[in-house]
Every structure is written in structure tokens, then in C-alpha cells.
Length: 100
Image (cartoon, rainbow, N blue to C red; front, side, top):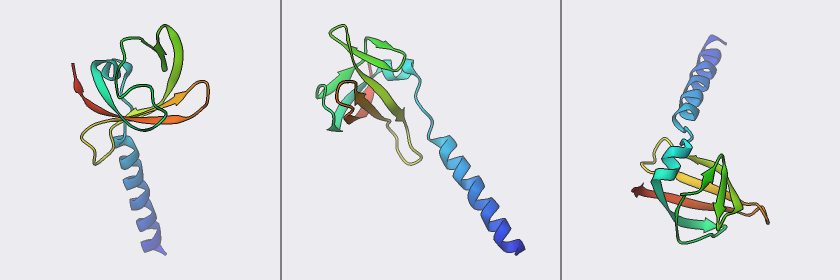
């Protein structure tokens, strides 16, 4: 019984460490990067966010999408950005391609 509880605690700690390593990027980091289209909801082939207010993305001065998630995973060198279309709810994926 003692071995099972030790294994459970070890797995729990590893899970928490994994989740902690998948942190969300701050808006300033998102703003400084450019993003290439992956799949799903498509705004443009490449994005730069000059007009980002909170988690809302504006295109042509109108709110178009919200950021669902953005961050680097444990085994990823670049971030993945997921945005959701405010009109349809469709989610799109963009991949970080560097800073400008």
C-alpha cells in the first residue's frame, strides 16, 4: 500500500511540474512576435498584433477574435497561439516564428 501512495504522489508532482512548464505568454510577448497560420479559423497567413487589447484581437478597428491560449509546451521551442472567431466560435492555430 505504501508503494502505491508513493507512486501516486510522484506522478502528481510530475503532473504539476509539467503544467507549470506550459506557461502562457504575456501580451507584450505576443505583440513582439509574428505568427504563421497553422489550421482552423483563418485571419491571414501571417499575423502581427499591433492592436491587441486584453485578450481581444482587433483587425481594421473592429474586434475579430479572442486569444484562447498562447504558450510554449514542455518540448516546444516556439509558442502556439489559439484564437477564437467572435462571430462563429471557430478556433484557429498560429505558430510563433520570431520577434520583430
